[in-house]
Length: 184
Image (tube, rainbow, N blue to C red):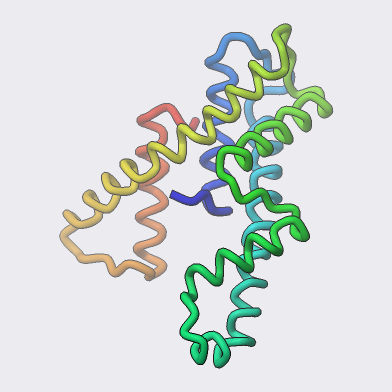
């Protein structure tokens, strides 16, 4: 699963909850400021990648005829272009490195804004944040399947992509995340 901007609030909540549960971090101003900072950092990083993806799509559309003429593999070409432009957009493509960098940036902001206190090495706290991000990603597919299964049992059939479907999906997703202790 690829982390998207829409996931940022949920991941941010999981980060804050996991920091509290760790027992090694004290939140100086409560959970909401930590969620806010984590969400801001995540959204900023994920928006950079979305902008990069959009630019790659534009370049491919501009050269669509040449791509078709040369029978180029569009998916492979997309990744080649993305890889070449990534440094220009400040995007890290390797997921492990990307989430590690996000965790570091979140920790740095939390510390700079005096939202957390701890008396252990920085790396230990950063790893809690990193594990929260990757933990969310690992469990999201399972949670999504549960939510879609629940929606499929509704008496009135909801059509994916409609506003009503999205509202019900978000509510059920948040309920499932709360059940798992990933949201407050």
